[in-house]
Image (tube, rainbow, N blue to C red; front, side, top):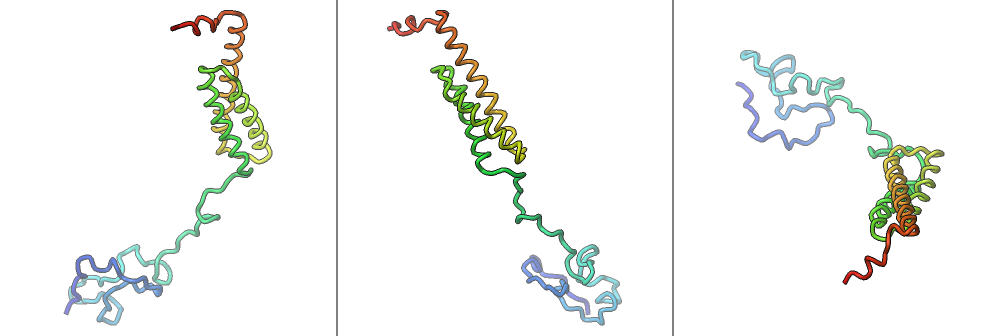
Length: 168
């Protein structure tokens, strides 16, 4: 008598067997060969490559990375990250608002917080913050240059604000 094939969809909800016996059907033979020696068909045990680890169980897995699988920071503190984000935000805001009011407050804040964060990354490197720092420093410098040029042109009389105030 032969062993019947597994039912459709069966086997997917089998409990984990720590002994390594992953065969859902007990073999009727002595365990020396296939369950049906007359047909030469293999038993429903395990397919080649599965369960072939020492001990008959699952192959060993690599241990999880240190820290529970989360990426590790290179060093530094969260204040460096906050300063770099503030530098980037104020730099972008200063660049946008510079075309409206030409006030160098935001670009100066971007440059100050950017240089402080850059000095902190010298002692504790944080390569993940390099982009934030560079965006903050570059936009802060561009906003400051535009504001200074605006005030120079305004002081020299090239830009006249009176012509724009009487437009009614």
